[in-house]
Length: 404
Image (cartoon, rainbow, N blue to C red):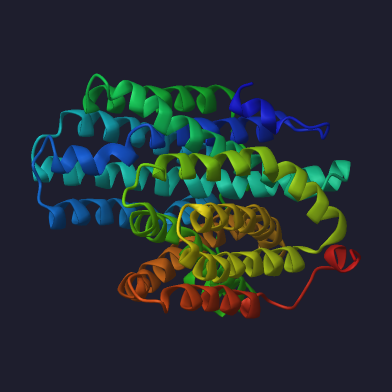
């Protein structure tokens, strides 16, 4: 069974929705075929020092997450199609450059280009899939979270497939993996150039004064939802910090790390749609986000208690509960956002949410890293999730208020 076959349901999907979900899968295949192995390439083949490797990886993250708001604003101004096409073209160029980069300057330039390409592609695709999910909800009655859950599962299927492809290609060399990644993005570019409607989203409009950054910062419900989303992202990103450290402590090695990451992706691929159907039937988006954050908090509290038993049980439970929290929070936040912001500025707000949440993760990761070797780490991160629960805005739409 292919990863994408798990995404099929009886619910109707428009051609545009199918294109966006498929491209998210392909985008993550290309990304995860290369980037998980970048640090080893930098320190091994290129001989860069640890601090320099960290700097390069940090620059890539900043050029991507920090500039999402730019990609979102450009999407509002020009529509999603040209922004997606430029993003794909830059990602192809970035991976080709990275394949032959053999100096610090060349590597930095390549990873900045790779990151900026995603800062264009992702907000355009994410805002457009949210807009299309709302449209399908209006014409067919299918909950918008259904499309957004497929989108999330498609991304996780790509995240599950990409590292396997990269590992197979790295039996040759890192350059081969980069070329394969560039090839994947070239296919995504060709698919969007051929299939994406020229006016799939909101066309360029004259923007009134006060309709930019200041309007974003004055939207209280948006900021509260962004704060809640940031606490979720900070907690979920601890997989990359806490899980390796806990495996070392519990087993003396990180041999099971790849399997646990695969477990996380597989849980989302298999469980995202059934869980979305259940949540959409019984809960509002607000309740779903709050419950997802609550499960995230329980992940840290339970792992903090069970780690004293030793072995892998605490790590497995930690991964399972964090994945469950992700399956609840991510689609519900995406579904709720279009009702909290002006429709013609959905791209800007989508990018701003990612950028602001990414900044929160950056700031929160410093104290989290300082606590990782102390017993206070687990209750502190559980407390972060509780903060997220409290931050979720109270207001609900009329449509949501009708649910139990």
